[in-house]
Image 1 (cartoon, rainbow, N blue to C red):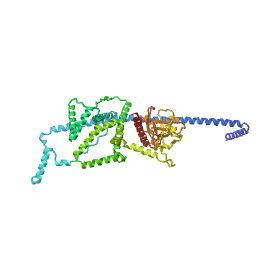
Image 2: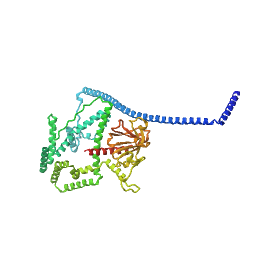
Image 3: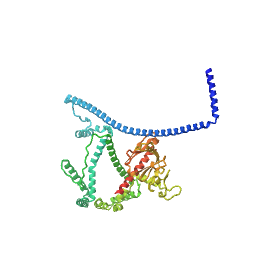
Image 4: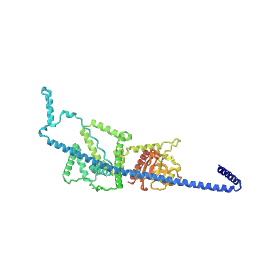
Length: 540
């Protein structure tokens, strides 16, 4: 207790001394020292904040790079699991084959052990002798059917067994390439036939086309058109028979060019397999795109999407129907045959020689070229919505309207011509983040901003910078590949994004954190396709 009291007394004396010193005139020095200490603390806090921001940026970069590496590792593991699954399936098929062979051997041994007398042929069902009239005729017919065809009436009531669907084969680069080559070889006769027809109508060989035109018109005049085509089909089939027997018969208007066949390689690396699959997928994408365009144009022709074009087909069908009702079939066939021959041999040659006449008078070409696809209809609707008169009363159309961003006029910010304006679907822009994997600093690796699409450019505006150096402008023609991509599910929009590859970047740029990723992807793909077609037409 005494020690505690002594401590309290000593502390009271020290406190009095401190109070006296605070009242002394030397307090200014103490205050200055406190201000210096506080200033040093604030600077140290600022430096620590900047260090934390840098560490945070580097952590974000490492997290995204880890995600990209995990995606690549997942693809490699999927390929490995596919190979393992094929091996397991092969082992199961071998086991099944061995079991079936054992069962077959057992059945053969049992049948050999049985006496030959036990094997009796299947007899027809006995007929009733008590009714020799109607049932006797029925039994005779049943016996006749059994003797000649080997079936009974009861066999027609047997329900056929449903075949199990064949399991889908796993994805394989070799199988995909081989299937594409098989499809190309299967389409080769059709493509060569169409090439010969085109050469025949364009008078590639004058003597051959002249002889074909004279023979065709004579057959049409005599009414032998159908017989002539049937004879040509029989002749072609006979030549194919002789070719299959080893005869070397090769006739074509246009000489065929033999393509070099690359032998299949077994030792492909992962990158070579990926490039091979990418090349095959690109070709399949182009083929399916052309097929989709043709089908959409046919659908729009019959659905009156373009009334002026469908009206021509409508009138032609009515004229054909009335002519088929009034004219005799022999005269009608003669008229159709003459029209087809003149159109194929003469009119098409004139139109191909003079494209201006074709653009003006070829009705079939005009109708087909003006028919829109569904993508073109969406673009027209978007442009029409962009040309609407604004509420302020400006009736000058889209040309007098000024588009601007947060930093100023649109064409001034991105240094583009004034004719380049954002599309109607993205006038206010799509919010997203740009991940440039070629950069290593946090400020350049990830940028938050707004994405715009014009007729010829893809523009990205960085919202956190007042300078245009951090903006990105990409020509739609320069885009080599565009794909849907998922960055991280924790980002806005569940991490949905788009990866775009250009010649100026080593790794594809990713526009992530998009809530409407599918709409953005469709718009960019459509505009890119249209820009590429326009550039190709300008070069021609």
